[in-house]
Image 1 (cartoon, helix red, strand yellow):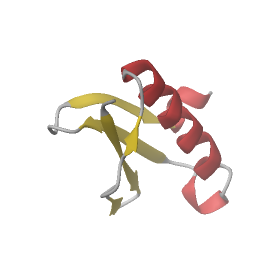
Image 2 (cartoon, one colour; image 1 turned 90 degrees about the horizontal axis):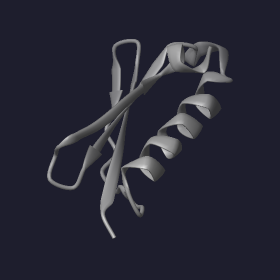
Image 3 (cartoon, one colour; image 1 turned 30 degrees about the vertical axis):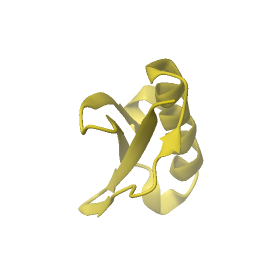
Image 4 (cartoon, one colour; image 1 turned 90 degrees about the vertical axis):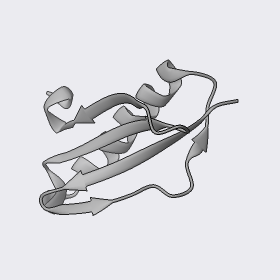
Amino acid sequence: MPRYYFHIYSHDQEYPDRTGEPLDDDAQAIAMAHRIVSEIAEEPEHREIEVRVVGRKGQAVATVDTNGLK
């Protein structure tokens, strides 16, 4: 099962995911990124965030941000 990492960017802060999450495929990883963005964006100080989904070998899978929630 592939492992995906969800790096979070909020304003000028970067929060790297060093643990990752084993998921079946890219579609599940992208859905997880949407959930992460939705949950964090509920907090007023984090209205503009971005989650970059990266595979185990460092390949970019997707970028999800608060613009996708509208």
